Length: 336
Image (cartoon, rainbow, N blue to C red; front, top):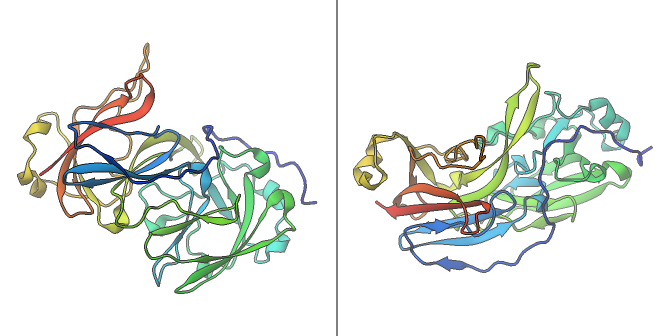
């Protein structure tokens, strides 16, 4: 009874192309203001800040990966795709062959609070999968609203991890007897090895631990409904930082402080955060009628402690490109 229609509650998503990319290093002139090349509502673009330039390092489409495996000799955390509103549930069943479509139906709807999601602050101890090492259970992954219903659900059993690799077993819930076994080799040059259940292959998403500072990306936040413990996603687009590899940010939210006056002396006046979403998305204001245009909150400025160990002041200027298309933030930065 594996091939059977699954009735689900759809979550708000966005349409993405499944094409993969080939990107070389693109160097940008050190202008006073820079507009992001790719639409951050549809792509994930990595940028690196350096003293005399800022450059696009790499980009990908969020739909291209499902799971991220922590690297490092002692690494064992696993993340799910934060940019597709993915969620996961521990079935408490220990044999992957015992999980079928009826198991999933019994666990629906996805909006129930027992379905977990990764916190957008990036804390490895706040992952939806959690401590799978001591669980030895089968998980069911809902890959997010960007996927068609028929390909949205997978079952997953994580067998083991050691200093070099992970071993996992998984299956599409519409062909749940076809169990696939994969070995995921760790790569200490990146923070997480990302893996696609669609292709069954590692996907080269992270350009390298020391090769980026800022990730312009769609992602999802979560709000609690009127039913306690039940959360729904809300779509956002903003900036994540390379928090696992030393990037920290201080937020200055004070209308009395002029961006042009910020200098090196401000570094000691503010606390720096290494939360993944410390820049986030609320530097732009929620559109209001009648125009529903995204405006920039001029009160918000940032100081970024970058991979190169320098400090930069940073602010957004616009959320639209020259053609008036939204999703292309314009920003400026300057070394302190």
